[in-house]
Length: 205
Length: 262
Image (cartoon, rainbow over all chains, first blue to last red; front, side):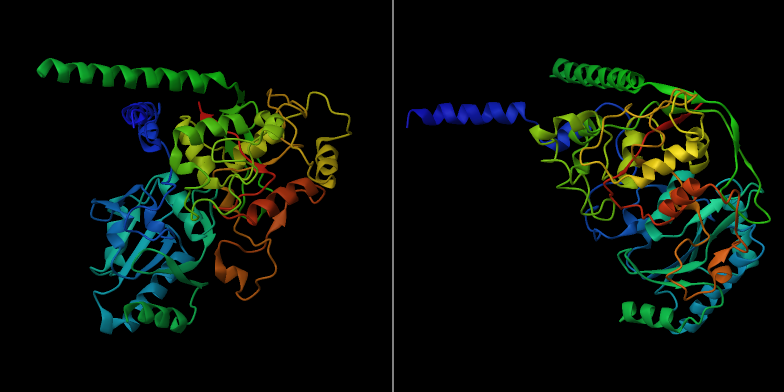
């Protein structure tokens, strides 16, 4: 019984000497850690790509975090607006999906993320959105080299900047669920969107 | 009370600046070498492919070791094996470690061996923590092509192919145990494979299994792909290897080293 206070004191000491790992992490020198959070962000599924912490910018010059897409299914493609061949068609394929889902207008997000960190400024993305007549459910994003590369790794969209300033890239339209977990991808150009549509409808049910 | 507050602020400030010094000290502790600007010839090329000029940059003398990575996970608990998110590192993450922050005593020699079984995301996070970054494919290939100072092979390609031929050693040798090249960089080939920032940049398919989509349709600007040098089998292997990776893969012969822009 006599030992109890001693034990308590020992515990206090231990507690004092062993800051929780989180605290140690915070006290760590140098740039505040990680390119990506290694643990699930609270509220998001551990497979959610919305855990990417980087801030993007929209065509309306607003800062944008990917979790802002949460709550609705999102149809996403990575493109660049100087692209002469594939990207306009990829955008058209996404518009075709939107048209087929007209009954669910406003319940689905459409997002384009640009590879072209240098040229696709907010202004350029705005111009593209106007040109392609992309409505209010569309968000066009540009971000840092690192943010775009990390997203491409998460979504398995390989791309490469070529020496003429353009990009060779995979043509994929990705369906993310309400939590940002990739559920389906449509590969290629002019692909029949039926499978994609039924995936989105399943998410909306 | 006011004094107390001021005191706390002072302590915080001191801790922060000490931290900054420690960081600078650590970053400076690992030798880096300058790779002079050069031209990188992509291994796979189409009619539109041009040689890529690469600006001079700095690269770690040797790969990040287990000892160095232990320090990282100690200070960044979110990257410990028991806590890491599967999205960012698969189940093989740091599989060769005994615990979250230690190697088994019998594995002590591994402390100075390159850390392997780390994902691209973990490598990115480590580099960022060091105030560095991962080298690009172009940078890595330029550095990797540096002329060896002393090797007993006819050419670098022969040396690399001899390495590919051998099975993974049971115990990974320490860093700086193979050859050094013209830039002062060790083990660019012969020890491990290394992550690059844009490892997912090869868009032609090396994987002929999935043949469901026409390649020209699946990839913008794919077209007819040719190789620069059909005898560069070693280069072909590296491109195939990178093309097969995903960002959360943790593989027992894949590690990394960090770069810095000049």
